[in-house]
Length: 124
Image 1 (spheres, rainbow, N blue to C red):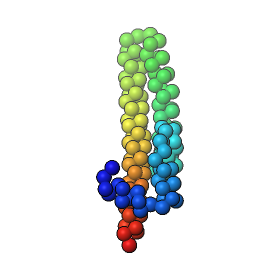
Image 2: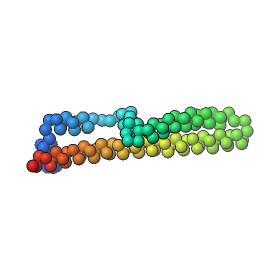
Image 3: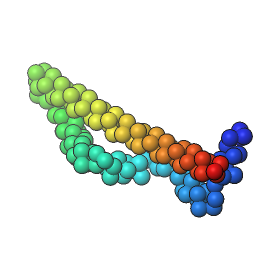
Image 4: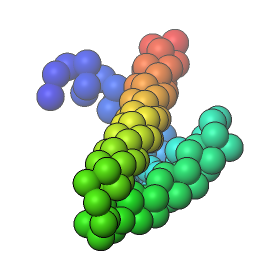
């Protein structure tokens, strides 16, 4: 530990330490997904989540049709549909995980902001 960490810990009272301890708890994937769905872009996140499910069904159906196609042209068509659905699914997941990461970083920034504010109050 550095001296500044020791000063921050010394400035915290029990309520502040309990609050910071609750922030330090490991956040699982499902709780982070819940944060994304309830955050400032919660409505859009719910819509995109529903679109991801629909794309999942489209992907499964198009892969099935690809393997059961009668001719070469149908195989190519369903293969392209499968590839398109797979790419869209990947982009949606990337967006979702980026939101989860951003909210996690914001959570840590708020935690640091609280610690700095408490250290500032302890100096006075």
